[in-house]
Structures are given as C-alpha cells and as structure tokens.
Amino acid sequence: MNRITVIMTYHARAGFRRLIQPLIDSSLVGRIIVAHGGRRPPSLPKCEARRAPSLNDGMTWNSLIESIQTGSFLLVQGSGEIELGPRTLERLLETARTSGAGMVYADRWDTGSRGRRHHPVNDYQLGSLRDTFDFGPLQMFSTRAVREALRRHGAIAGYRHAGLYDLRLKLSLAASLFHLPEPLCTVRDGMPPPDPFAYVDPGHEAAQREMEAAVTAHLKRLDAWVGPPFEASPASRKRFPVEASVVIPVRNRAATVAAAVQSALAQRTDFSFNVIVVDNHSTDGTAKVLSRLARTENVVKLVPARTDLGIGGCWNEAVFSPFCGRWSVQLDSDDLYSGPDSLQRIVALLRQGRFAMVIGAYTLVNEDFAPIPPGLVAHREWTDDNGPNNALRVNGFGAPRAFDTALIRRIGFLNVSYGEDYALALRISRQYRVGRIYDSLYLCRRWPGNTDADLSIDQINRNDAFKDTIRTLEILTRQKNNREALP
Image 1 (tube, helix red, strand yellow):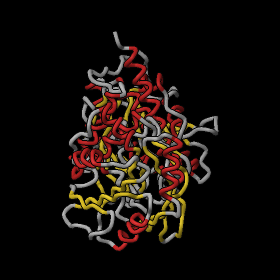
Image 2: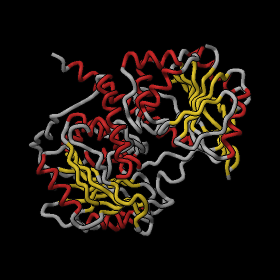
Image 3: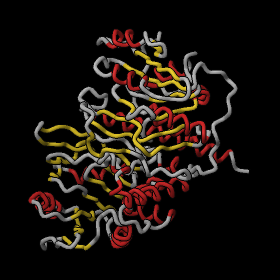
Image 4: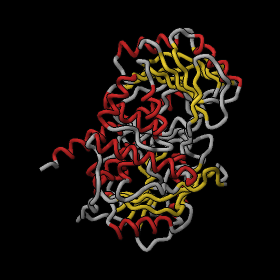
C-alpha cells in the first residue's frame, strides 16, 4: 500500500517516453495505467493500456478508482513535455501523509523562449469552483480519501467532460486539497492557459452544461444553492436628476477616453441622461481631455478627494454623487457602445422587467475596432433559474452592466480594481432579477494599454485568488441565508 499507481494519457510525442521511463524505474511506482483513445501505447514494464474516451470521463474514473490497489495514485495531466524533479514522488507522498490531504499538488518550472521560470499556483479554498483551476500537471490522490468522498456523495456522475471536475468537487467536501508551494517538475513550453471564453463558445456547450450540472449539485450539497423566484428591484421614491447616467472610471487613458465619452454622448434616447467621468488622478493628460469634454452640458467630471480608490471606489464616487441618474450604466474608458441605441435598449429592459441589473453582450475588438476571436461574447450559458449558481463557476457575467442606482447605493462596490463588478453581480443575482440582452451593445477593445494586458503569472494568480475569495464569501453568505430561511 506504500506504492503508487500512476494514471496518465498516452500521446505519441517523444516527451511521453522521457516522462514514463523514470516512473517505470521508480521503486515507488507499482502500476502505470495509460489511457488511450484507440492508438495503443507501446508495451512497457509496469504499464497497462486502457481504452478510455478521456480522463474527463466519469465512468472511466469510477472504473479506475475501483481497480486501484495502492494507497495513493498520481494523475499526470497535459500533453506537453514534463520532466520530474529529483525527488518528486517522494515529496508528494511525504506531504500527503503529513497533511492527511485528499490530494496534493505543487508548483512547477516552465521552460521556453523566455528561459526557465518558476510557475506558482494558488491555494485551494471553498470558492475555488472554476473548472479551469490550475493544479499543474501532477496531482497525488489518497485512494482512501477518494473512496470515502464517493461513499458519502455518490459515484462520479456519468459525464463525458466533467467527470474529473465532479471527482474534485466531491473530494473537496471530504478532505483538503493541499498546495505544496515547491516546483516539483519542469514543463517545456509551459502548459497552455485555459481558454477564457470556453464557457461562452457554442462549440463547448455540451461540456459547459455538464460542468454547470456538476457545480449545481455541489452547491446543493453545500446548502449554498439559490433558486427562483428572484425578487424584482425594490421600488424607490427618491428623485434623480436624470433617468440614466453612463459611468466611466478612468486613470491615464488620454488616448481613448474621448472616444468613449463621445460614444456615450451619441446615444439616442427618449429620456434624459448624463455621462459621469471619474478621473482617478490621471497623470498623462487625461484631465486636460476631460476638461474640454466637460464643457458639454451633460458631461460631469468628478475627481475624488481620496487617492486610494480602485475602479470600484470610483464607481461609488459616481453612484453616490448627486449627479447620478435612476439607472447607472457601465462604459469603460477604452471601450465604446456599438451603436446609438445601446443605452435606450438597456434602460428599456431595466424599466420593463424591474430588474436590479441588466447585462448586455459585447464584441471583442482590437485597437482598430476590428473583431477578434471569439468575436461576440453573449453569455448564453445564463439561465434565469440557475444563472446565479453557475456564475460561481465562471469568471464573469459579461458587459455592459447596468444597475438600479438606489439598490447599488445600499450595497456599494468593493474598492478594488479587479473583481469589483463580479462581486457586485454575484451579490445582486443571489437575490434579485437579472435581465439579459444577447445582441452586441458594446465594443470591448483589446490593446497593449489594457489593464489586463501581459500580466505576470504572479498577478494572474493574485487576481484568480481574489475571485476565489469573493466566491468563498458568497458561498458562506448563501449558506447562512439558507439556514436562516429554514422554518
């Protein structure tokens, strides 16, 4: 029982033999199961070829787990060239025994055109529900913990795409998933990053529906699921200076902010609106551009007294100001509305459905406004009944977003520059009705000056960990609310 079963997928590239040979040679490895889709791997010592659709297939995993006769099993993922470190297996086993974890995963080295770089990954927490969570290429599982998790929560569902995801979620309820912050292997040319738009790609619909089903069942096990009916936006008797305000937080966007403001001013509506631009102490000439634009009657320029505000804090400056309208509508400082009717359509839906929030669709474009893949991002995976639950799995709600100002004044934005909109949307959708528009209302521009352009792995990890923390707090709140709602 001190030996390891290794589970991996066969690929015909040279790196496969270089990876599997040290596993064959290791006295810790008793058996290697090589899954394949039809092209059998060569006959090698300790190796057992097993035909399987993929290692995401739920029935494959149920069969594998039943057949394992060792105390631990190692899942090796990825089709790139992986080189184990000098004591990788020993270190994973030692950590698993010491921590009592259900699964141990670790950092890695990446090698490529930029040389050899440390690639850390994040700690796992209650809100780490993304099916794209990066565990790296090596995951050491406790066979006992896995079997106990499946005894408690049922066998892995018969998913074709979400079987491993379902296993991870069930295991996380029975044991810890332990991050060892040491690089234990090297991946040549890195592991390809997850597709950030996989959940809105129609070609991935079958997989995404399975992922949604898995996370929905998980939230029900956690008693953190929320369901209809959702509330209409509460009525407000407060008087507002205009019907709608387009809110544009900005810092150092002298090259793009004028086009954004002009896009807002070009809107044709049957109601009054203004544009509130919150200049967060720009130093690049943005202030001068805005001073010229503010000569227009319905452009309001605000400069916060504080110097410690993020994007969310700037939103609060606009929403709580006496200039803000009944509805507050997003426009980022380097984006544009796609046509002159965007604002009219958003506000009409807010009024019609008494929605607390309306979210449109956007087209991803380059700096010359030419569409780039995936083009239209419509978030059609949303459903009125289950969208607020599936939103805990995916990384965003879409754009442009528009809010009931009176309600937002009660809730407020987080004073951060990443995830502030996601946190607010989760809070609203847990309780209130959300309206969707699936036509493109917005051009979301990708250019080298974007806030999220060319982020380091450390910054990406911080962003992902922060959103996981937002999800954790949201789950805890939903659990508390569900308990308090019991008769």
